[in-house]
Image (cartoon, rainbow over all chains, first blue to last red; front, top):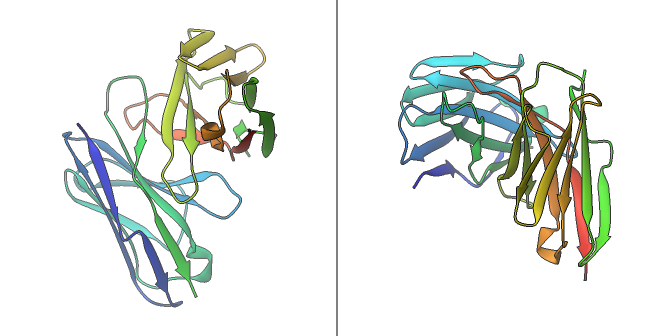
Length: 114
Length: 113
């Protein structure tokens, strides 16, 4: 069966510090991968998606970047965090080509920028 | 511009009764709709979906209804249980190989014993 891991679960970082959040998927090959952010009182905002290794698309301009160095690994990064980067970050995967579009989410990372 | 709208931020229902969560969308190109359930500090869990070629899909206590002419869908939970208390997100897809979803802001359901 497929599983998705995210770490760390919680993170407190000062403004201006770098960020690296990691997501890995097991039990599937060539998944589509996604990074979302849920800010307080808001819905899920898609930040990045990837349909393959090294292929990253950004949905919104921001202080963050993403990379996919391996088929089942997706990394969210920032060189210098802003207060507005605080939120709950979620990684998700889906199986391309099934025309069902279900995405399956990891447990999330709570990021607090102080 | 919010393409998927959940206009009720919260809903309170008595245990055993029906919960009805509503969702409206504006983009007629959406062809697949999904509902997710989310507990605090956890990732959303996929609940049920419906293709735009159908008007109803049922899975146990959960039924999703789609009214394309009104650009409206709803999730019915019968009977509601205290464990159903969570935030429910409606999502829509325009298809495509990337499979991107657009989410509503969510409705917090509270089921009281």
